[in-house]
Image (tube, rainbow, N blue to C red; front, side):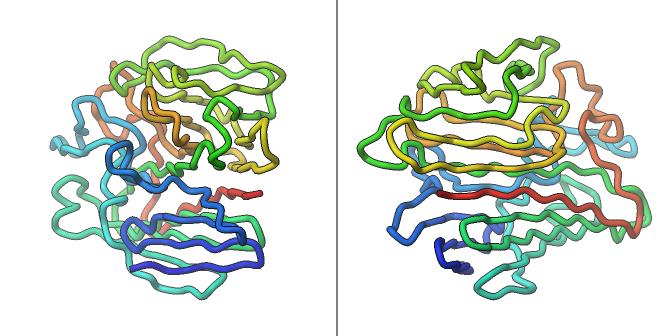
Length: 288
C-alpha cells in the first residue's frame, strides 16, 4: 500500500513497507528518487533503525546476552501502520513484535512523519520509550537520488556542494570504521562525482561536519538540497562502479569501529533514551 502527498510543485509516494519514500516527481514528471533497480540496488530511501551501519560480527551484547543484528537494522523491512495523514503529511508507526525481539530485545514506538510544503519534504523521526529500562538505539536516513536526473546528462556532470571548504573522512574496512582519517579533496567547496569515488565504500563524516549538502549539475538547473542541522554523522554512498544514483544520508548513529567491544551501551553513536521519554530529529530535502 502507498500514501500520496501533493503540493503545487511535487507529487510524493510513500510505501507502507518501511514508511519509505519511493517517488518524488515534479509537475513535468521528472523523477528525483532512485527507482530501486533490483540488479543494481533494490531500495529507494530506506530508514535505518535500530542501528546505523554495520556491527562488528553483526552482533551486540546486552545484559550478558548476544543478539545478532544485520547492517542498518530491520525497520526498513517491516510494514508500518499509517496512524494519521492527508495530502500534506503522513505519520507511520512501528512497534516491536516477537520476531524483532529475537534480534533486539527492547520495547519501542517508532514514528516517521513525512510533510510536504511546496518543493520541500520534511522527514521527522520520533522514538518513544514505553520500557521501564533505558532504550538503546540509533536512527538514520538513506535516500537514494537519480543521478543523472536527465537523459542528456552523465554522472560526471554532477557535483556535491558543501558549506565548508575542508572535510575529514573516516575510512572504512569491510563496513567497519578504522582509525584512519583523511582530508576530502574539494574544489571551491565542490566534490565532483566519478565512477571511482566509492571504490572504498561510503564516504563517512563524523562530528557534525555536514549541515547542508546540494547535488547539482553543470548542465541543468535542477538540484537537490538536503538540510540536517546538528546531525552528528553523515554518509554519502553509491554502489561501486555505478553511475546511476547517489545516496545522501544523515545519521543519528554510526557503524562500529574495528575494535568495538560489542557492548551496546558503549557503542559509538548510540542514543540512550530514558523510560517514558521521547527522541525527535528532522531533516528536509528540497527539489528544484
